[in-house]
Length: 194
Image (cartoon, rainbow, N blue to C red; front, side, top):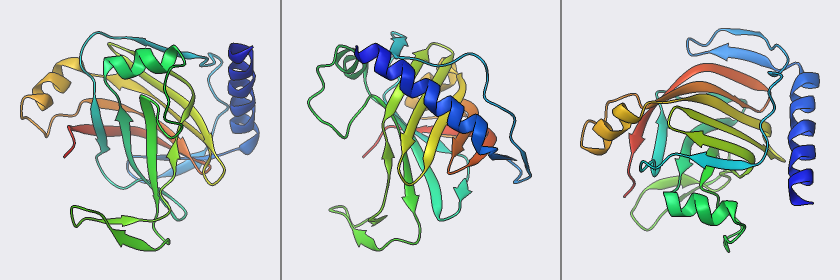
């Protein structure tokens, strides 16, 4: 039953993307009309990677659609993927693959470390994801951002180098859609967290 609901939700998400006629913006900021989504639909939750992919995948620059800016992709540890895929995750605002955004018009506050953050910071959980040794794919939806998707490549060799201190390595590259815009060839570095 749950898989059928997820598949239906993914199909609805892809149909919404096709009907939305989203504009596409490449990494240089050029915008073009969007083409319909790829025929291969993402469904369910799966990971096929034994390497440690935990961390925050930080975009190479600001990717903005209206008042929203993309902050990062967050990937959990291997145990997080297994627990989530088995339906045993207790926390409702967590998934081992999620995308975070900031509403730059919202009020700001200070966190416990003294950092500034936006109070309206949507965290998009997946309706489907796939993580392999070479692929990152995500589909989700948010009431403020609409359909949110990411399809890209993961470079495990670069990720290992980043985890060993070379934090300038590009560890992932892909196409990101949110709030009606698609950004092509978004490049990511890796951050292990505080």
